[in-house]
Image 1 (tube, rainbow, N blue to C red):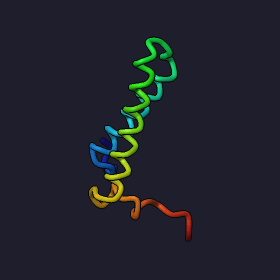
Image 2 (cartoon, rainbow, N blue to C red; image 1 turned 90 degrees about the vertical axis):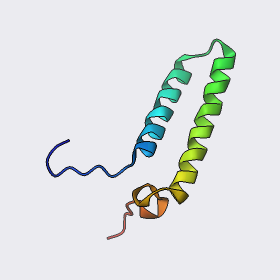
Image 3 (spheres, helix red, strand yellow; image 1 turned 45 degrees about the horizontal axis):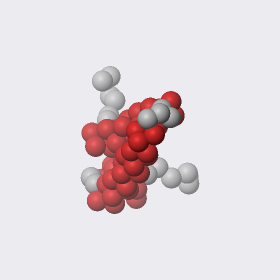
Length: 72
């Protein structure tokens, strides 16, 4: 970490985002066995649901209300 750099997202958000990226990557290249493809889809949905819950109940910087907005 560089001097003056501030980490904002908590470990849960980072793990959730990287896990979802990994699931999508593996699922993209996996067609067989079919059960693996299906369960990776279930895992992706579970990660999205957990992140949505964390977006309302998590710490300050993980909340959707604190996202950067485009207005002035």
